[in-house]
Image (cartoon, helix red, strand yellow):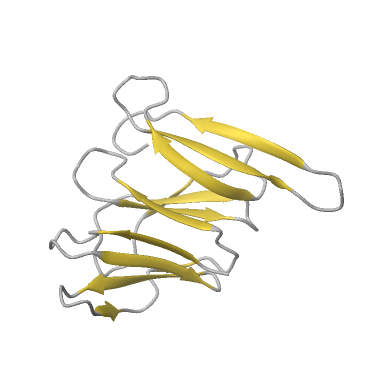
Length: 142
């Protein structure tokens, strides 16, 4: 299983892809010809990644890479515009994210700042449960 998201990460006008496979997050830069250029892993998590999302969380015009990490119960967010160097990553651990599976970015409380809703839970052995976490944005991508 792998995750995939699309958007113009480097702001060159070409569609780029972000994918996860085996805990490695890869960026495939669009060349504008229908072809993509793959680089070394953008970052490595060594875990199962059920979802990647791209969204401008800070309003600076740059897409942030949002990665849900299932086995470490974390949501990881790149803190800056895409470059070929290793990103600064903000871990949203310490919140109730058991096995995060999906997220949505929207302004939940209508304060003009992007918020994130994360759904996680376990669906095995008949003891199923789900947690919905709402992370209110504080501005600047936080």
